[in-house]
Image (cartoon, rainbow, N blue to C red):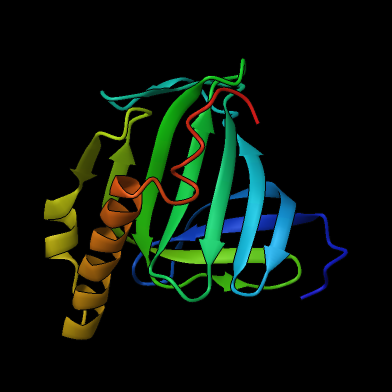
Length: 162
């Protein structure tokens, strides 16, 4: 990886490796198996029922080449923490100019107070995954839930602002 690259393209892929969306990210940190990016919500407001994503929201996105998930910390434009959206994925592919992750449908929403909500279990169950992939995904979800319970990074950042 070229450590001088300050911007990358993030590619969200479905379970079969097809691109769902792509967007720019600014590199905050690269180390070992991790890249941390700053992105933002630039689409129309989206009410998910447990959070509203709005233009101007600031996202800090954590991708890993050795973990079966990514974590998005979401803050309002005023710095107020809205929560964390965690995607269970195959390990990310990170290069000098690109981050790609294959989404396995299973998600975890973590509210600022630490309350967790598992999302899209039916979609995950319907995916044609290998038994080893299904097991790795379920272990990833359990790892995320344990991290939240332990207030491990990045779930320890409950203060407002960066």
